Image (cartoon, rainbow, N blue to C red; front, side, top):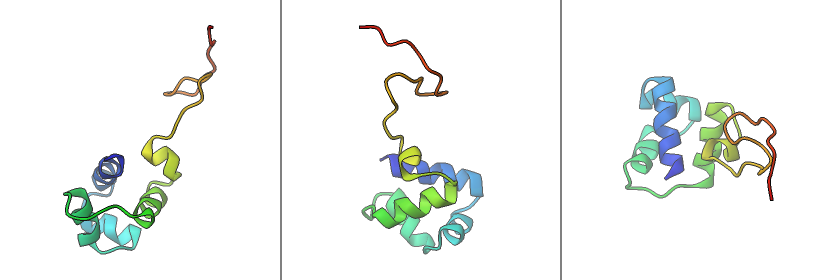
Length: 81
């Protein structure tokens, strides 16, 4: 689900599915079939989406944030017990 949202956001950044597919180096149908639920995700698709976004797969898909840091800005915060 997160990859679908990430691809939709990337489409917004690149303007069209055609442009995004060219940047990612995959056929447009591969992306749109996955986004609209007719194909399963692959690791390769996630990797290419992360490269198109200029980030890592963990950041693209919302990996875990350290407990002692703000998940939004990364600022240190006190952890109370």
